[in-house]
Amino acid sequence: MRDKNVPISRPFIIEKALQFAKTLVYDEFRGSNGWLEKFKRRHGIMAKVISGESKDVDDNDSENWITETLSKILKDYKPENIFNADETALFNVCLKRHSQLKRKNALEESKTKQD
Image (cartoon, rainbow, N blue to C red; front, side, top):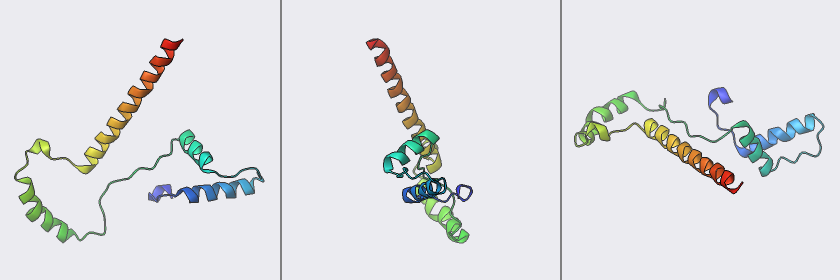
């Protein structure tokens, strides 16, 4: 499923985990939301929206829109004010990571000051 970029839901992951537990005769496993959150954190699993091109769009319609509509819209914009959605998403991810790093460093500094 990962190779095909198929989104996997919480219930699907929990159901698979319950099946594995049953196969391994591990009767105490419950597959709670808490277990799933810890599992995702431990393995670095997160939900991401992947942007890309859709194959369901007619190429002629896209080409017409680019040459006619988009050119009219863009004539009033300076080149430095035009962004690709993938670029802005990437920048947004970088900003979020940077703020988390700052917060983590602040917490570490706070702990060392207390000691």
